[in-house]
Image 1 (cartoon, rainbow, N blue to C red):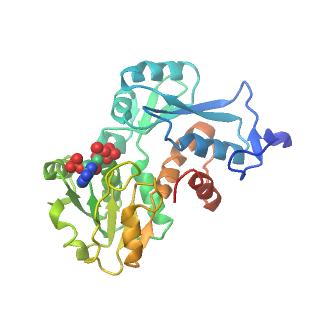
Image 2 (image 1 turned 90 degrees about the vertical axis):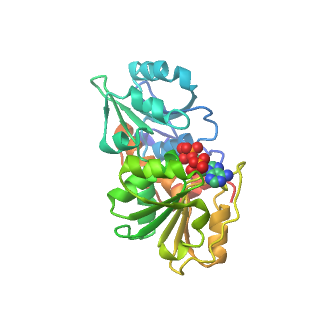
Length: 298
Ligand code: ATR
């Protein structure tokens, strides 16, 4: 046993950590709710941090259908859970369960993090966009006045665009369904819209390219990304992280462009919840990245 830190010496399946938390009756408990939830890396990540910081706590995956979501949330709150993360398809329903939300959640109409407060109130926020910004900061990207081209106009784009706009980036949106991009720009009060067919030829105008579509995700359609018109300083990012080297990032590397993988956003978006529920601001470092990356195909 690791003495006061409450750790048990053990080897887990990745072989990296040599310790395991002891869970007592006072353990702080949190969860991720999704349908399905098996793909989520959040339990792995949060339990890695709980072990690292020697916290008496646990984080579990819960498969919750949208039609059961509200009653599950009431039950979790009533049974002493500290909070939870929300993944697809429950982010909008989760928003409607909150007593309080912050400005970013109100703007995008969905939440990925709930905190059950001591007075019984439920607080919700969306940390995806902030996680994305942090992952850019890890790579020393200057966001203010950066010319950003966003591919996609779904929920993920909504979070990323809100946070980029907050940091004063200049945003252009290209989406297969043009009307959705126009609606998004109108809802958020920001972003020029260009036609989906035009983005490759206009690429020379941008400093940062962000794929928020599901193109290139394992099991989904891919796309013939043409980056031949990019300027040499273009930074290419993908919020897809399975596989780590997405088709877009692969092409970017062939053109010797700087790339930022989606895993950083996933790790950073988790920090807010961990801090709220377990009281420690966890570090996203190379050990954390390596630990989670071991479960993802290159
Ligand atoms: P999420 O909430 O994860 O962003 P979503 O709301 O379903 O998911 O959005 C998915 C995004 O990927 C959309 O921008 C979608 O484009 P449409 O609005 O035209 O549907 C985009 N997308 C999905 N499949 C695509 C494909 N084959 N080609 C181009 N864009 C695609």
